[in-house]
Image (cartoon, rainbow, N blue to C red):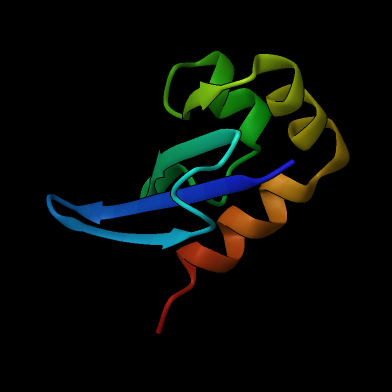
Length: 75
């Protein structure tokens, strides 16, 4: 399964990790990137495109939280 993570810092300013043809694309504003991604998804602050079952696997495993936190801490 391939995943692309996108953390938006502002309009036209985002950090992207992962292939463009990913099975799941997860997008979140930087203000919500360090929060629990499952909660952010349920509140509509984290957006996802692609296979929903695989999204839930990423949220459950904690992989999404680690990747989003890493991207939110850019220098």
